[in-house]
Each structure stands twice: as structure tokens, then as C-alpha cells.
Image 1 (cartoon, rainbow, N blue to C red):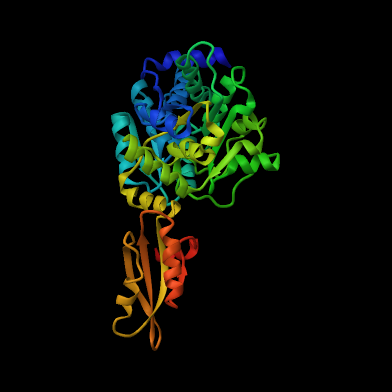
Image 2 (image 1 turned 90 degrees about the horizontal axis):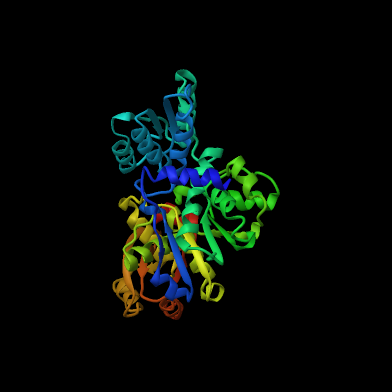
Length: 415
């Protein structure tokens, strides 16, 4: 595998320079370790996906009788890498996207592809636009470019590892390599390239809690298709890992796959934005959220390489990310209160709040009884412990209330 990957890496230098492997002082101090970040968010399309797409095109176009028109289905990083490479090679491409794709992603794909790429919006869901892309390929003879489940795509993603080896320098190997997993192309490529340098037990894979296709497949001893997927971590929200990728990763233990809640990922995104000024998409923050879950106890004194897979973040999502981060950190809670319908009842309630408690939302829901009314209230505070004092104050006042912060059904309907 190595000679082919090294050749792919060298060919990539005609497209863009290697992405940096940076020692992050902030995280290194926090975890008392050497934390290196492989910054795939600094590629021309702000994700590693350009690598696999470039390698796929490079090999196909080297064939004298190969196709000269291409198609893909994607609403994210694969579409942008595909478009960039189409323009680089001067070939025609069509990108199928769901109608619901954010305009920012459509505009960036169009910008990268220029006159060489056409965008077609089909269906409300990915499966519909994927089928439309397949139909287009069948009708026109265009070649479908898969997002992750292809040997040439895997080989292209493996160039991440080839760069890491040279950037760390001779004789240096990481104690831990942390990799995000969606379809598995990046993880399959990196582990395959590093298998002689890094023991299998030194890899840690990260998946969103709502899209645990690799972990469930390893637990099952065979491929599993998830019935439901949480799409918040959209760059890794895959219901079924690639067949080739699972074959490459099946030698690892399910215990080496860490599941991270979508809200925990948000905490990492906000931290990196506020402290380091680094903009990460949810999938790009997975490996760093894993470091937080491990903590200094498990990282102290180690050399760690964490792959930051992408930074294509739509800032229209920032309020939702901040909301999720605060709830996960215990700094924001939502309550439904039952207050007496009498003058001064609201003032009495406000007097129960502490000096650092701030009302972020207040909404009268309905009159639940003749003498009582229900209120939805959101409260933010500075440290989680303040909510313990607030609960004691509520109880002492005989206030009837329900904490709905972690009730997903109510939170999605009301909040």
C-alpha cells in the first residue's frame, strides 16, 4: 500500500501543499501531553475529502479510454472536493444535492467547480438525490464518484498518514492516533498506512452517538445498517460504514471506538472557536472531543496525533451549537413551572434566582388550572453548581416544576 500512497501524496503536491501537523499548546497544557493536530480544515476545500477525490480522478483520467464526465451525490465536503478536482482536471461533473441543502454549501460547491460543474437539487432527502445521481450515470455514461467506499478513495485519504510520518520526523511515532469515522475511508486509509509504525492498540476511533455504524458493526462481528441516524454531525452521520472500509477496520476492537454525544462535540467547537480562533464543523471536532472525554489521566505524558477532518461550518448553526454546548456543560436548563395565578407570584419566583442566574427564555404556555398557570423558562448560569442551589430554593418555596433539559422529546417540541 505504501508506495502507491506515497505516489498519490507526491501527485497531490501539484494541487495543494501538505496540511500542517501542529503542536497545539492550549490542548497540550490542558492534557499534560504533546497534542498534535493534523489540520485537514486547512486544505483548499477545508476538509480531507479533496484527497480521495483527486486520487480517484487521477487514476481514471490516466486511462486512455476512460470516461471524461463524472457525477456524485453529496450535500457536504465530498461535493466540494469533487467540484474542485473537476475544475483542476478540466472535466465535466454534475453534483446532485437535496433541495434542503443550505445555500452556503451550494454556493461553495459552485465556486470550487466553476464552469465545469453543474448542481442539481433533487428531493428532500439524500437517498432521493443519490438515486437521481445513479440514474444520471446510467443514462449518460458519467462515472459515479463514491464518497468513501472505493480503493482509490481510501488510497487518497491515506495520504494524510503519509504526511504525518514525514512531519513527525524519523524515529518518532505517536502513542495515540485519534481518527473521526463516518463512512470509514479516512480511518481505513490512515490505519492501513501506519500499521507497521503504530501498534493496532494505539488507534482510537470516534463516532457521533447518533451514528455509531462502525462500533455497532464491530460489536456485531459483521456489517450493521443503522435504522436511525442523528444528522447533526453531518460529516460523519453515516448509517452504514463502507464495505471495503469495514473490512480494513474489522481487526480493531469495538472498545477502540468512542461514541461522543452531539452536544459534547458542540462544547469542543465553542472552546476551539473562543480560545484558538479555529472554526470546526461538528465532524472536525470529533477527535478533539474525544480528548476531553479521555482527560489528562489517560493522556498525560503521551504524544497524540488527532486528525481534524474539516472546518466547513455554516455560522447560521452557531446559535444551536452554543445552545447544545451550554446544556451539555450544565450551564443552561429549561423548566416548566406551575405558578399561582395571583399578584406577586412572578416576583416571588424571581427572588429565588441567584446572582449569577439569568433568564434566557420565558414563555407562558397555558392556564393549566383555575388558579395556576404553566410557564416555560430557560435559565443560564456561570457554574453548574448554581442549579443545585436553585433546586433547593424551588423545593423550599414549594414550587412545582419539571426539569425538561434532557428530555429529548419535549426539548425538540418546545425548545
